[in-house]
Image (cartoon, rainbow, N blue to C red; front, side, top):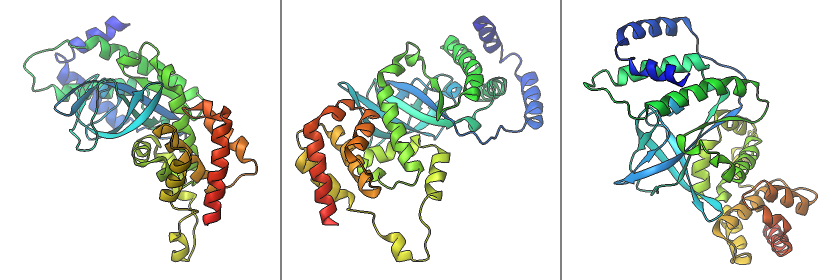
Length: 331
């Protein structure tokens, strides 16, 4: 089957006119898939190399990325991950893309790249393949030569998309699947499942109307803007309180983020910066929406994070208890 894809791609330029006519006719006859299902699909890749500040990423057109789309950058550090920021796609190729230079984000080879789609945004396998081939014909129409570079990767990626789409459709979960660059073909996704669980936890609190995302830190706030998905963003807005009193709507909930961050860092200064950002976010979330058993609540949240060992650290829990009480006294 791979050979069939390769042959089709190799001779696509020879049949350009006929195929374009066929595809245009099909496009008129087909309506874009729309549905109620908001199951999330992650796009996963790596930065392969960086030249003059521009990152080459192993995700491209065949992975649904488009020019001027933003992607989130996450960096492996020891046995956890740190959000770095957002990069904008400048050029796309079949299996790779290159980003604009950024004055804020300094990508490095090995950085993880994430973006999201929702199931209703994804075309069926045959429709996606035809749309992709049509796009490639248009993009390469002015080329004088023919390149076979990464043609096999392109064929494999198209096959994976076509085989995965029915699975995404059947899946009954918030995350229904993944679109992976070649660097993830050896199962590397399992190494950062804890990171994806933490992202899912933050997304869920945002979905139900939580306003504590800024407490996680500016970089987490930026990457989550890419990873929330349009349905969660719409649900978040719909969950905000409605009042005729504009002054009431402008009031901050609980203590200011800067105060939560200050107290957490004063009490837990010896912890990792990424741990402090997580604890600051969770403390702010608890203060916004108090629970009956705070310890059990924190155990559950730490279990969904990159740092599950915090759930068994009594010293951390004692400091968090004091932090929460101090901040409540300031209200």
